[in-house]
Length: 430
Figure 1 (cartoon, rainbow, N blue to C red):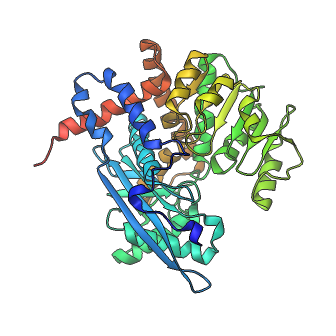
Figure 2 (cartoon, rainbow, N blue to C red):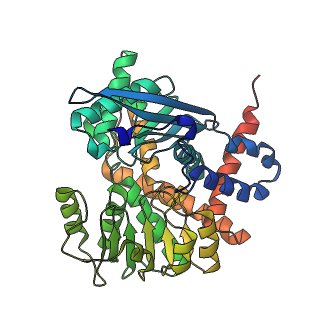
């Protein structure tokens, strides 16, 4: 257990071996500042999280020992509404990462026109190292510790890497017990039986496909027959791969934490998903050949979907990339210097704040349904998701074309204008 004990919170994000996510976010903000006109007066608002909560999460383990984990909840900006963002359970969670993820949620929600601010949470823990009972204890203690800042009209968590609908059920129940009444709207991504929304579990992957299709239609890269490589084969990557495949694309490469697989004739996505469900990873899947992990970034493809963790697409990998369009299923997968290289090489990047916004969009639908106690069918959910994402994509693409800008810069312009206009109109108190 000693290897999993968190280091001091002040030092937790100072890991020179990993890209520094908060620095990447700040550089993205600096790049958009010249395009904001008079609203740039408020730009420092976006460089300073509104609220950071660092908590100790102690539990009694099954063997009777006591373990401590470090947890975070960061509210980056609440100018446009309550905070919204997932909770990540991962051994590499750091304060810098959670700050950046909260900032990207601010941009994502504003770019899509959702009435939320940006927030994010996490616990530095390897969930697979815990029993189910221990995972429940971590979840409930973490929820109790951050309970002072979350709520249906304050800050609404959701699933992220390492958490799922069961974790959300425990969070909802813990918060509800503490406030003395059922508060189904305190989290989204819950089981349907507890007020969750139909279509939520597949929403992020579905949104990745919608964004790819819209980009392909405009860039002349049709989905039918396209070669697709997907990094990350969890909820986002596997669903996106399946929907790509259903629309005639050929999945030529997939990668997860334990294996990288390649098959130029196409990987059977349903079989790969079944193998992962039973074995816990892609390792040992017989429907493709294993290749070296770094070779994934050299696979010739039309669409590359990084759907794992942030900081994966480095400058070195960008120089050797053999894709036509990158569709960011993960948050922050492309470093700023890699962005510049891809643009120079003519590789189109559909940014995370647009491409993976399907999850938070359907989370918004779930939140609305919980407040009204009136629930929509899955077909209605998917149609509404399609409408929101197509509208947002069109606005971002149009601005990018008009000003000869990358899609990321265009998305940040639209989002920052909305956030900073709200900041200006609300004013400062006192």
